[in-house]
Length: 602
Image (cartoon, rainbow, N blue to C red):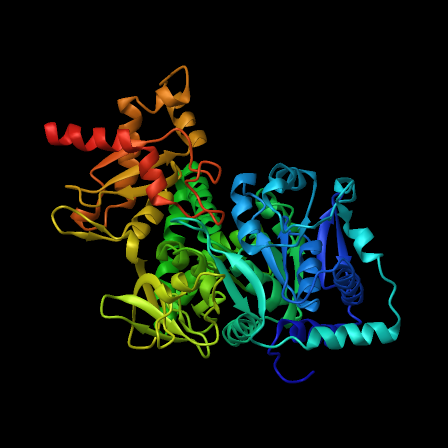
């Protein structure tokens, strides 16, 4: 295969044909050792699993669920479903049983892959609510048992001759570009999740368009830790890196990423802004804890880096004095940061939420550019992304090839092209609400295109806060600023139709209690500690530092300190960790009403 693929099965076999003899396509850490899987092993296991599904009676067009953490078996199950020409339905492994029910029942999944006993237990709890589910396949052998196949058993069900293998490949390659490849349920910040039907063409066009902007190489290595059940990691960290010949290393979990970066030494990392916020916060914390000389050196290096970045990205010549200062800053500060992520990183790619430009500028100065992009599940997902050599901080880049973008009169971002979903599964009314008669998908995001075609996101259309005084406030950038403080874990802006904006703050318990001990502020429990006026004043002072450049009307006037973070189980977070604002406000309604009543009375 030499032409660009138009289906995901063509993409799969194309990589196999190019690199069949290579010893490594992916690695996974088991028993403290990194184990490699070759292209030939991947092909054999995908074929065996795919043929096994067919032997169970899974038919073309059926839906098959995947409930698992990131691991090679996830990729094997996915490619096997594609080759069997059925549509897989990824399910977030963090979801509780009750939230899994809707996804599997609505999709009508006839089979389901589960990773381990923990995930199997969720399914056994709700199995009576899933009449279409006939087969469960467990990745871990110890999860198999009555009514549950092991993956090894499925792979061993059929012995194939060369002629059988050829027929299986031909059948897989008969998939059409317009066939539904996967059914991905949206996070559901409001209402039940809807099944987004993405076709082979949707995702493949996104892979090819993304690669023209992000120059992945067959010598690159990536570390995979974002959930494969999310379309960003699925498209970019799975199909795109596979098509490029980049080796995929599956992280054990999010908490091991820092250590495993040093082991894998990736050259490309895909992430969401929270990772960069944490790294930046730790760097600032380490600087603050150092000697006065070290703090001065760090602050000088950061200022130098910002000046260098601003000139570099503007295409302006770098004066000799600034080039020398930047080299010194790099040797004293930035080079040490690069070592912490393995020492050979070429670039990060960020998606899923807005990235703070202050953090983006810092990483760029440190020689670790973060290429921010933007998209939705409904757009496979990438609409636009920055690229090396064509980066504009504070934007999400230019639209990728074949992705049309325009801004509606009310500021909403519209997009049209081969990346736009086929529609919502069995929900034509919901589909018609977001895709108009001319094929434009209404993203629900507010943004603007600059004169060079770079797209800037300003906020979610439905999240805009309009105060009683008529001031429009975009909450996300302000929430992002709040989280750059080491004393803040989560933040949610409130104030729609109210006299002034306020903010719900989940403080970082570790940092706050350490500060309280230092100040000899003692309380019997953490919730009581948060009620102390000294603690409120501390949070207020810390946030004043990061909010100093905001317009007066944008600064929260009051804060509510919450002892527990938002969670998926409480319904206040989506599986991709987006805040469900209505649920958060409803859960804290009494405290919010009391805050505004108290101010009104005063």
